[in-house]
Amino acid sequence: QVQLVESGGGLVQAGDSLRLSCAASGRTFELYTMGWFRQAPAKEREFVAAIITRSGDNTYYADSVKGRFTISRDNARNTVYLQMNSLKPEDTAVYYCAASTGVIFIRRLSTYPYWGQGTQVTVSS
Image: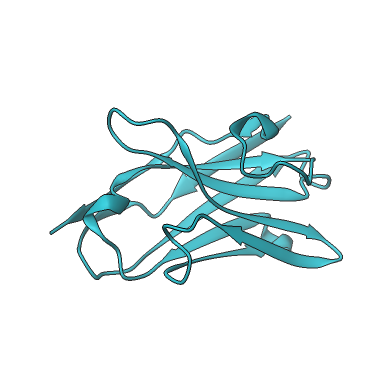
């Protein structure tokens, strides 16, 4: 089994930065893909970013965060990060970390069998 624990959320103003962390434990050695998703009130959960680690790291982003968010991974610490810069009120959501042994369809929720409980990010205008 795999456990994921997110941290780093909070209340910030527009234009500020936050860094989210997701610590993985358990059977982590085959978790090639780590992702971040978010869910705003009354909206569906959506893809934010993913990182696939096999021969090096490959990163993928939603268009809405490209250029502002950066996903990274520290394999020695089994931790994935989401650096969020230039935050906007529309980034307000609960952010979820997800993990998968798969490397395709990484923007789909169904690809990820493992999920954290989420961390709230609120951006005020």
